[in-house]
Image (cartoon, rainbow, N blue to C red; front, top):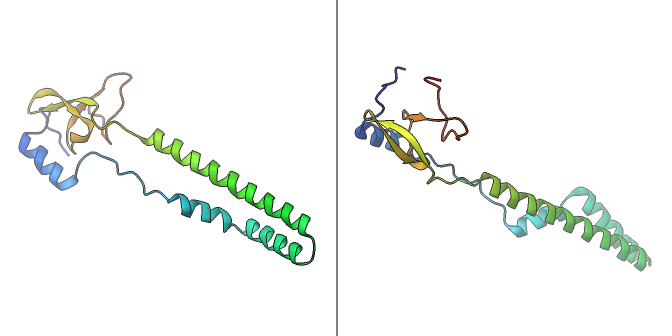
Amino acid sequence: MKDNPFGLTPTQVEENRTRHGRNVLEPPPHKSVWKLAAEKFCEPLILILALAALISMLTGGFVEGTGILIAVLLSAGIGFFSEYRAGRAFDILNRTDDEVPFKVCRNGVLISSPRAEIVTGDIVRVEAGEEIPADARVLES
């Protein structure tokens, strides 16, 4: 594929945006808080311990059964909160600012364009320390 050293024309930009879409990552779908909590209580070890607590309580070991039940609730609760916090931290790390301007060569002119408006085939000028706003090929370094 031969690149035009002058960049894309406005018509090419619109065609590429229509064909390939905007340069925006869609966030992954999130599990609901209830589903996340339910998953913790459906783990095999938690189910075995809950069954042991029930059997213990039914056979007269109320104190032992209560102790096992408290351990089950603590384990599932800690697992839930740990995974919930990790998910929120991951969301913060993956957040991108699609309005950050980048230098793009279009129609022979270097312009400033937000990350979301960069399209396939754009020539982007990146300097030391800057992010690369999309998948790209290096034309010159």
